[in-house]
Amino acid sequence: MEPYRYHVYVCEQRKPEGIPSCSANGSPHVIDALRRELREQGLAGAVQVTPCGSFGLCQRGPNMVVYPDGVWYSGVRPADVPEIVREHFGGGRVVERLRSGDPATLREEIEGNRRNMAQALAAREKAGVLPDDFQQTLRAFQESRALLTAVELDLFTAVGSGADAGTVARALGTDPRATEALLNALTAMELLEKRGQTFLNGPLAVRFLVAGARDDSRAALRHTVHLWSRWSTLTECVRRGTSVTYEEMEERGEGWTEAFIAAMHKNAAFRAPLVARAIGLGGVRRMLDVGGGSGAYAIAFAEAQPGLEAEIFDLSTVVPIAQRYIQQAGVVDRVRTRVGDLRSDGFGTGYDLVLFSAICHMNSPEENRAMLTRAFAALAPSGRVVIHDFILNPDKAGPRTGALFALNMLVGTRAGSSYSGEEYAAWLREAGFAQVERVELPGPTALVIGRRP
Image 1 (spheres, rainbow, N blue to C red):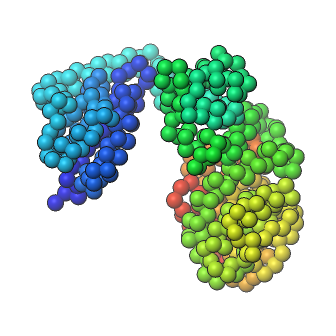
Image 2 (spheres, rainbow, N blue to C red; image 1 turned 60 degrees about the vertical axis):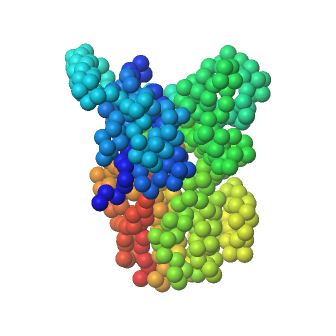
Image 3 (tube, helix red, strand yellow; image 1 turned 30 degrees about the horizontal axis):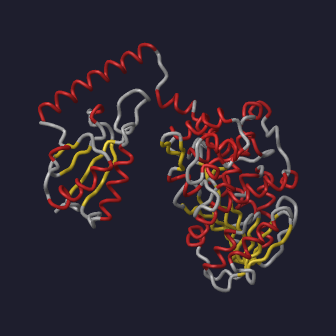
């Protein structure tokens, strides 16, 4: 017995612009419509939808194949989806008007397209043309910069419920011609929609990029705007071996600090409950969140463990921001703040748990050794130190996110980097910790935990 009544494969392969493909013809929208319609018609449990590569009928797309019937549909539009779901998946009746054709004709067309593709690939190989995905990586900064400029200008808020280029330019105080070019580019990136001369926010923009949106992420994304400037110095940083634009946190200004903490909070608020469950908070009465930023982890730990009291240890420029988040979370009675410098100040004593979340990558190896030694002194017997960070493989050539983040630390810090699990384990043992273990988490980060004997 099959787990699903039907299994639907929908082509979603992307190809270079100018080359016919299902994706360019709108297959992502068909997939979204298919999943939505299956839910609405109560058939989500009966039909499995799987995006896949090319069927070889690119000019006819979007294409889908329905098994076990072996029915091929072509030229499917979102407006066709309710009929397919109702008739085929609900009633067992093939929608003949969308059927791709007879098997012999399809096979001939597919084989012809394969031959043409093989010839094109051979010609590209002979000419030494860069692979498309490699060129896309080289030019990825263009789309990134267009989006970051839109965030910086707060363009999506200016678009609102719909506006032409002139209206947006007047609201932003920008040049009309240049504004229209940016709006058109964002439309091509599917962040905006265009109807006549009116631009409208797409689903992602409506949810994340407009003032007052349900998941307004503009403040957090302004941190990425700031990163752009630092990453532009990477070549010189590689030559010198350190950041060429480094400033201490206290020197970076209120705007930078607010954006940085907002970005960290956006991610931490999601991951903190995962970390709390992975650690296990039974028996933890007092915890210290070193460099706790917005307090997302301290708040989540306090919420997860009744009776736990947390202290956030951070700079004077950060603590007032943390206090706002604590107030909003309603845990002022159990989460407190203390001003201090994690590179030099003592942490106190008698804690059951000391947390370093997204902290160690800012430091040099020597700074981390010294910091972990002070953490050992701050813990009660059997207390634990928890390092939550990007953890590199032994050869440091992966995972990809952690390896790239090492460059982020190169352009942004004096001597920070991403470190391997073996390095963290060695530093913990040097500081006196025992029972060192690594705990995997969903996503790009992991935990390294040491216990004080």
